[in-house]
Image 1 (cartoon, rainbow, N blue to C red):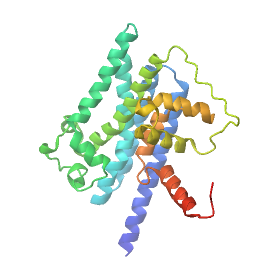
Image 2 (spheres, rainbow, N blue to C red):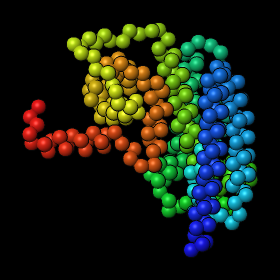
Image 3 (cartoon, rainbow, N blue to C red):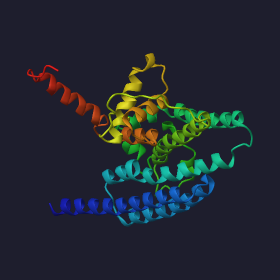
Image 4 (cartoon, rainbow, N blue to C red):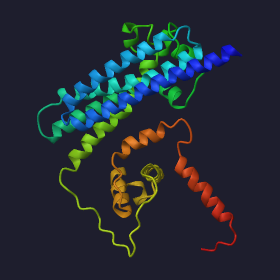
Amino acid sequence: MFENINLIKKISNLKNKINVLLSDLNEQLNFTDLEIDDPIHRSESAINIIINSIEKLRAIFEKEKNVSQEIEIDFFKNVKPKFTSKLIYYNAIYKIETKKPHGGDRILKKYLNHELEKLKRYFDNNLEFYKYYRTGSNYLDTKYFTRGKFDIKLTLDSFYFEADHTFSTSHDFKVAKIMAHDLIQVYLEDKLLIMENREPKEKSQVNPKLKQNWTGSKVALIELLYALHTEGVFNNGTSDLKDVAEYFENIFNIDLGQYHRAFLEIRMRKSDQTKFLNALKEKLVKRMENTDEIS
């Protein structure tokens, strides 16, 4: 009994330390993003901050002696990738920006699309693990996320053979790459969208008798936006997501900001990914069951 209580305290203490460290890291990176406009200098600064944070993470983890297999799997599957994915992301942005060719929009678009293709190739080459991770599977966790148990048949990155095996498993880096690639994709697509919209476009003028302002959460509207666009309900499914987003912003008098990034956060929810849509359905069903309502 006392051993279980001590174990619970140990896990809680470890999580608290890591949460404080992650919160501090995010705060520093947010400040860097706001203060440094140049993407190369911003990436350099971010990389130094993240490396320092990962070293602190390692020190915290190594202080915990004889961790259970459950703690070890959780750390390498869910904790460490939150830190290393940021390092992969900023390092990728640094490389993309420093290797960016000089020339017109046609050359730059070709370059950015080539970078997107590289992300897709990595996805195609690691499709089975993508499915495993995205579906929340755990039947191979002991092979993927415990140290010293690599299997060459499980598509290892060459990085693993160069890594310190006391602080890495065969697939924690791959999880971090999946997380980083989502953000890199958004970064590249945003760059392409900016290029496509250099010339200001007038948004359609909608003048209803009574303006309807969206007073729900921004995340809820983004969830609805993606659901409707996925269903293809606008212009027989031919409308671009950005056009629908601009329309929503106009008619509901709201700035959706980086809705691509918000969608990634929605997708990464551990439970209830379609929280707003589920609530809509529940409330509509209750309304339909109210036989007194006729309009």
